[in-house]
Image 1 (spheres, helix red, strand yellow):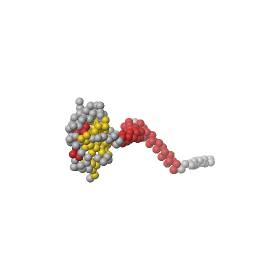
Image 2: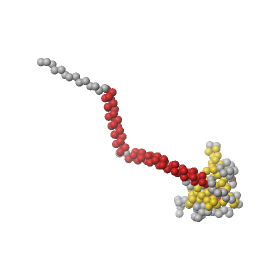
Image 3: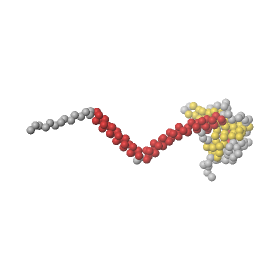
Image 4: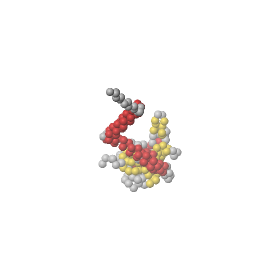
Length: 211
């Protein structure tokens, strides 16, 4: 009987293509596993969605807010000049606009917008740059004396009313006196014995005051 020869099967596949196939299969499996984890991990989904919303809100809102703030901030530098009246304390004051709201309440928190300058007109601080008014307690020594007297009134100075705008010229003895202020690492924003000029916009009474 003649011997039956077994046919030889020759594979044209290379070992590298086989490895690539296994690698692709593994990557696909990992990708599917990550997608399933994301689906069933609400905290991760919430975090990633939140980051996306935050980024879009920054892109969408920042330019508009910055423009509005710049306009309002620089507008305060163009307030019309006015002739100061002087109290016995040396505080100068003049009203740009008389407010129609309530008077500044003693010891309560109020909201004001302000621009602060040196006597030569150079601006060194402004709430408009921060796009929100300053909340401060008035009349109890929490701010410099010139602001307490200039907003709350007293010693011949009439009190401000909500909605009012007033310029204050504050001498050193009612400001920071012989000591420099706003110092950091040896640099001071306000020199000693500086006369300061404030533009005050009395926005309103702080809503969080105790009744």
